[in-house]
Image (cartoon, rainbow, N blue to C red; front, side):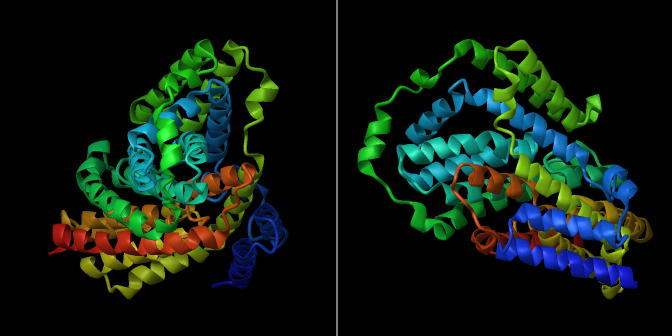
Length: 429
């Protein structure tokens, strides 16, 4: 590794340590790290701002921006209060039942949309329902972020790395359904059981509040019916366009921005109100993080780590698959999984071509499972995690790096540990 490569690693680790220890605000740490990367020429303006593989992922930034505007408009209709009451009544006020209901909805929606969009929609409901039942909201938000990452693993469009893998490996939407979705269902069942153990202290049942919420009529929560129908119409079109991405070829960011623009232009909502719900610190944090990770890619650090891991398996498909699963999970917990997968997929393509046959295809699934599930390990491992923490901070419910990570490490270890024998028995035995 070059001297510049080692320097970029040092800068990244220092910034990561500041984020993890919360000695400084995470936005300051990310921007500071990004600035130093540019200062020492680990990256440059072209790579940082315009490269599709090593720069700021503007598709993610503008997808978040567009969906945050749509959510801001939806908030004014009272629909989130409606859904909160509905969910609490279906769970009969029981905290664990409520968490299971919310994580199942989150995982299912993440498979059809994407995990970031899903948590943006489900988080406001969670705040309201937890307030109604006097429950701590942080455990519910953490569980939903993790469920979104697990659910998004099931389909081609559920998590951005899957789209990269599909393009490089020539895989279809149905390929992901056949090879990934069955195991994701198993993982969600296991995760629901883990929630009972990990978040048991949050399940404080209040019979009085539960009884009170059962008497409410959720329909009375709707404050503006006309705005609600306008918002739902736009949201439905946006979601349909997300699902039809393989056919329409419109990036989700374009769809979200068009939806946000139409909604603001066609309704009585002012521009100030519409953008008032945008999580600007979260967007800036992502920008800094993308530049730092892109610098590791630019200096060849990630590629060298990935190649070393593959070389260590001596080309044997079973060892390569297991090593790829583990390394992908570890690296995706530390760096953003999008540039990691963009860097690793050409290497996997060569290995698949060299191995030939159906058995070699397992490497694509090992890469996808490792990258997607590894995102649950830390607070910055996946976009959904960062968004949830940002929303929580905005609502004065801070979720620290280690508060999230201590649960995430357990969930990642269990889910990746279950995937390993699945891959082995189905493809390698």
